[in-house]
Image (cartoon, rainbow, N blue to C red; front, side):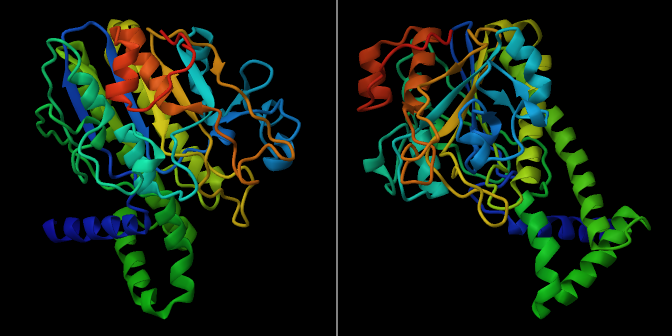
Length: 405
């Protein structure tokens, strides 16, 4: 039996290799920090570049239908305010929207531009720095710098399997490690790899035959062909992801009901270069399941909690030839929580018409991700504006307060 399990683990691990390291769902770090305050802040990094246009859809813009057909309330997505619609894969979050516990900011980004590297984009997002720092080595993250300004904060960090300490909480604050029990999840990129590569490449054909044999052992006689095998593997891995998500949210709920006040973790799977409909569906459902699981686990503490989800950049406004989207600029942020003043889509909309797109390819960014994060810190913890613009997010212009809390 032990030999069989090792072969199962081998094939499941092999399926994960097709995923970009920067966007991999298995690289799901968790960090925690404890502070002397009743306010809870949860920061979620959506690794891979979430497509804001497909997630919070500006169907009221005349240019949207031509860029993104089959989106909007006419196709089952959920109207928010007469201009924006919520992707139907986040439909189970609509009660939060109606209760004022969900909000969005659109057409936002870090100052990072043009090079569109996952790693540089994520580093700048977590470091809270400007585009002139792209490609450099960073010693600390904005959330760690914030903790150093919070009187009486006792800091504790934890890390999930497969990644170093998150940069966002790296710094002078002391850190400890924690890793939940985890298994490798099948990514959309890995599914695409298995679905196509073995037909055309002699180098992989023998390995694929062995994979079919092993998957028959794992999944039984219901595997009839490659498509059936892929579906069975995806179903099995989805079940694993649900179980691990439940374990994670239960753990975080317990910690946040105790002494922990600030948590940061990441969710991958947002790099949707091809077949965006399927890849984005899985990522959105993972996100909504995680958010609602955290809400259940927090119980009454949800009323004192604010969640912010941010991504390194948006994606191209136009679909590419493989029905996906490439690395872009302007994207979206998601806010949730019982302490939130929600029910709003924030930001200055730049438009999607001729001449409106950045570099004629991307949603233009009219807001700074860092400013929204900074205003959250100001609202929840009373952090001074000069400290936010000078120490936590050096060089940032906060602009106008969006009154998130």
